[in-house]
Each structure stands twice: as C-alpha cells, then as structure tokens.
Amino acid sequence: MSKIPASVLAFEKKLVPSDGLMYGTTWEKRTSISQPLKLQEKSVRGTISNRLKKSDEGKVDAKIESANLQTVDSCALTPEQDTLKLSFTLKVLSGVETPSACNHEGFNQTYTDAVSDYIETNGFIELANRYATNLANARFLWRNRVGCEDLEVNIKVLGKDSDKSWDFKSHEISTQDFNNPSSKITELGGLIAQTLSGENEFLLLEINAYAKVGKSQDVYPSEELVLDKNNSKEKKSKILYHVDEIAAMHSQKIGNAIRSIDTWYPKFEQHQKPIAIDPYGAVTNLGRAYRQPKDKTDFFSLFDKFSQSEKLDNVEDEHFVMAVLVRGGVFGEKQ
Image (cartoon, rainbow, N blue to C red):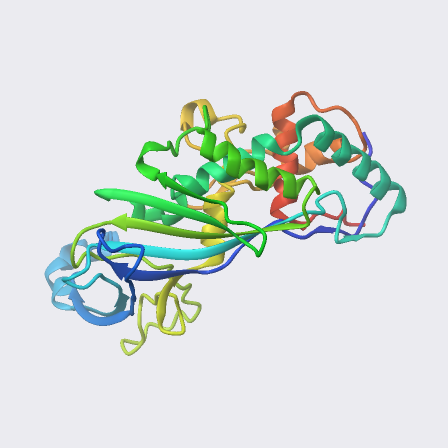
C-alpha cells in the first residue's frame, strides 16, 4: 500500500475549549453567588524522601538534617465555602472534511470522499455522544472530581437563537464506558454531531461544574511546567496556573478530558479505561503508547488506507481516525 502523497497536510481542531476559571461557593447558593479563587504562596520545610544512592545510604542522618525547603503555590476554598465551581466554554466547529493545509489535489479529493462517506453512514453520532458524556460526567475536573460529596454540571447553548440547557448529576454517569447514554446526553450529542457533520457552522457551549468538596478543602488548578531547572531556593518549585489572578485550568487539560473517548485500543480489556484520542494512543503518565505502528493500530497506518477510500477492518477504526482528525494536527508525509 502506498503512503499518502501529500507532504503538507494539517487539520485544525474542531473542539476548542477555553481555559477553565475556578470559583468558590456554597452548595446551596452555587448558581447565584461565587467568588474567584486566588492562589496562595506557601513556604514549607519538607524532608528528604527520595531513594538514596548506594554510596549515600549510610549518611541518612546527614541527609535528613539538610531541610528540603520549598516555596509552592496552593489553592483552597475559604472556611465559608464548600463547593468548587469551574466555568469554561467549548466551541465546536464544522469542516473536518477540509484540511487546513494540503498540497496534493488528488489526495484532497479522495480524503473528502472518505469523510463524506463516513458522515453519510455514521453522522458523528458515536463520537458526539462520547464527547457529550465526558462533559456530563465532569471528567474535566480531573483530581477535583475525587472525593466529592455531590457533583453537578450545567451546560447551556450560547447564541441569540437558542435557550437549550441541561443539568447533569455527574456521579450517576460513568467515566469507564459510554454505554446507554441518557436522553439528555443524546440530545446534547445530537447538536455536537450536527455541527461536526457540517449541518451547523459552529456550536458554542457554556459549561459550569459544581463539586462539593468540603469547607476549606484544597482544590487543584493546572500546574505550570517549570522549565528553569536551576535549584535556587528562592524560586518556587510548584507554580499553579491563573488567569488575571483567578485560579484556572489549562484549556489543553480540559480538552484532553473531553477527548478521552478511545475504548477501541488493543489493551482496553485489560486497562478498562478510556484514553485520550492520540495518534499513537500515548498515555504520558503511564509511559505507554497503546497503538503501536508494528500492530498497524496507530492513526497513520489506518489513515493511509482511510484517506485513499480503502475500507478499514471495522467501524471502530473509522471512529478513531475521525476522532484524531477532530483533534487536529500536522500529518503530512515527509519527503
């Protein structure tokens, strides 16, 4: 089988979340009163707890005497607040059948035909319902979702011609599978599918999630990557993300949660968790790539066939390929 002829090939992402802003409130007044959460700076004295080298094992006392001094960011609710509110918007775009950059007209035609056939056959319903499920179950709260007494998500369609909104009891919606979505999820998924299929130009959603975590409890904004490896004691070892002094979560982290819909990868039966859509099924915190090129289950192996209108072995492979295209990226064949 020949490789795709396009050396320049790129797709814009079709699910575009904003950063998520974090607020503190009470469960009883969660929809009416909230206050922006600020980051707090702490200086702490920790102990040495890493594994020592063989040559240092007899010097534990000396090591412990060297205090592990750190300055870190933290974020917490106030003593009057027991609920975290996370607020963001999500824009869904159409046009997945058209690459944002492609330097081969023949490939462009076969690709467009393949996507049009997928839309006619499947209509993005399966993918859209999975995206809607991950909005409804509040997967995007990540660590903030753990240990909540109560959890609710409100989703509203923004636009002058729409008054649609949905409330979800997120604890009742599984994060492990996408079987048997509720009528509210399928209604939301239907709007997302219509947009991805090109029936609507775009869809804009406002999402507000409420997690009752407890008074004064820590909450967890995104953590910034510390690129400067200088071990100066004057520098912070943990830097949290904020937008105009309001604690926040990265749009990339929210997007990763929304596209955690891949249950079609080879090791799903053992892993039993959906992973984020990625060309190689990469899960960085596990150091694993679940879609290996040698097994022909990676995106590029499947896309080379799909984009030239060759039939894939099953519809799950087609769903995966289309989900990567919705994710976006640069996929040209190097010359």
